[in-house]
Length: 193
Image (tube, rainbow, N blue to C red):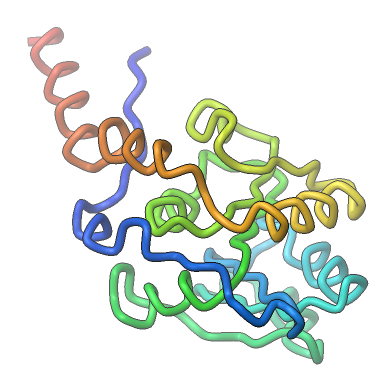
C-alpha cells in the first residue's frame, strides 16, 4: 500500500488567512457545515446541538438523503444554502461569514471541505473518527460524533479560540494540495514501472 493525500486546489490559497472573528459575538454564533447531506455526516445530531445552544446553523452541499434533508430543513435555526461551487465567491463568503466550521461525521477521510475551511482560517470542529488526526494533528478541535456534549464543548471552545493556527495553513500548503497528491501518484507509477 502507498498513501496518497487528499488535497486542496491552490486557488484557495489566495483567500488564505482572511477569516476574522465577527466583532458582534452577542448575536447568535453561526456554525457552518459544508458537505453532502447523508447519514454519515451526522447532521441530525449537529442540528440538535445547535438548537440546544441557540446557534444558527448553515448547511451547504448536495442532498444525497432526502429523508435527512426533510428532517433538518424543517428546523428554525437552520438555513440550507444549497450546493456551492468550490472556491467561488459564495463558497468563500460562507467560510468567512460564520464563526465555526463543524464536521461531526461518524467517520471522515478527512473532508475536503474541512481542508478548504482550514486554509481560510475559520476555527474547525471535526470528528475524531477516521483519519482526521493524521491530517489536522493538534490544529483543530475534535469531537466524538456520538456525544452531543462533546460536539457542543468543541464548538464552544472553537468560539473562544476564534481563529485557526496560521502555521497550520502553511503546513496544508506544503503537504495537502492536489499537486502534492499528483507527485505521490507519479512516484507510485515510477516504482511499479
